[in-house]
Image (cartoon, rainbow, N blue to C red; front, side):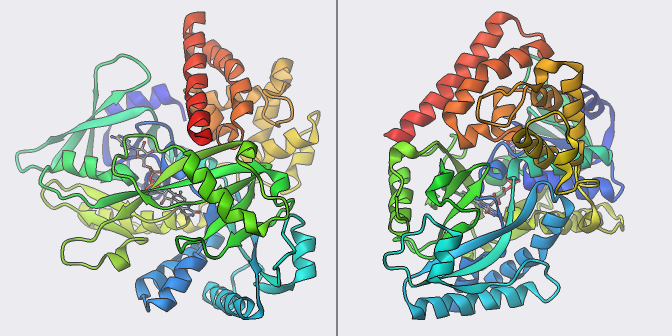
Length: 543
Ligand SMILES: Cc1cc2nc3c(=O)[nH]c(=O)nc-3n(C[C@H](O)[C@H](O)[C@H](O)COP(=O)(O)OP(=O)(O)OC[C@H]3O[C@@H](n4cnc5c(N)ncnc54)[C@H](O)[C@@H]3O)c2cc1C
């Protein structure tokens, strides 16, 4: 993951496949392609997972809501999507157990009939997952057991609860691990590099692209490849139209937000599924990084270039939805942080039904430019989506190479053990546990840095497990370049605790300054810009 080396490679090598976009879809395609033996480039405009792939609900799931829809509307497309999600759940957890794990979810039930309805639905969910699925089966809990597992539940009006399991992951670090694994398999991977145009041959087929390094003033570079794969999620139409202006819009971005609340909100390691919101959807409250992640919403968002941020009316909607289920509902003052993301939903092709396509993915080949686009989909099925895309790429390139990602452990997974944190001697338990889960079997490399420079063992913020050595490690090994790369995605402080992120920012900026030889003015400017951004989010959330 050396950015300077990879930038040079982009300019000198002729690639088989160049993937545009370093979210779950693009990182997944780059890994699949590299493992099939292709010469691969991966270009990301911002940071790996900077857009939708770090802003999800973080569930690895078939989707209980989609299952209900599938039955109610007799929609086989939804059912297929549920089955794919449930099949992939196990693979996503198995290939990076430090970053993904089973999560128990509890659904409060207000009467016997509702309990029966949910219990039957979740039995069907278990049944679709299959007998070999290692996650525990669903159970109908008594009121007493529900309150024991989740003391924050409101006993008033509670009849019982239904418990089931799905997967949960650290989405940004998972995406980084996929990109990192692709890099270790030979892909030239670069972040903060924006694709701005294409080169074509006399037949209009793409032969190269131009890209601009956003970390410095420099001439655009040209990257040559036999095939270009567009994995830019909500931004896909822009790249499709750069390649072929005659292409119609296909993506309908939809905004979803989350708020972060204190752990005591549920006071439980189980998550809660609220089965029906006033607008007919589901909302999750999930323990994540010592907080409770509450979301999400679903709203058309026509301008994907504008960062979707949490607004006060959305805070109110989510808190109002949660309130009846809790003995002590949180107020807006207790919101610690929040974020918005854009679902890359697909609009139907003219003449085709939207019903099947909205939550599904599609691999689109434009015969005029030869651009391959991976559209739509969800985090859970990123590997299957990449497989479908690379199967098509093989067909176009006339190569037969099988997909091997199902068995590919991601960076950090090979020697990871649940109790591996105990080997990280000399650190407080919370720090050791955090390093083990974030970096897997590479946590020892972070600890090694603290032995070289003892000040690196210091926490960035009191009460949080993030230490200075992580800045050094992520700059050196994970291509972190900016404060947001570190605070938002390498560590998850920016999405879990805005006040803590603001305390850490000057220290992270000073360390980045040491590595990138920023002068004091630059360190100050970077810090101020970051603080102003977070202040802006806080203002919007407070209303
Ligand atoms: C609120 C919300 C909750 C969700 N929850 C879940 C969930 O719990 N489980 C689940 O399975 N799925 C969930 N999803 C869906 C899932 O997050 C997305 O399907 C997935 O992350 C999309 O990944 P992507 O790589 O296609 O897009 P993105 O992650 O957006 O990646 C596209 C990348 O392309 C880059 N890019 C854009 N333009 C250029 C350019 N010109 N040059 C180079 N790079 C460029 C962007 O910077 C970006 O990083 C959720 C989505 C949302 C919005």
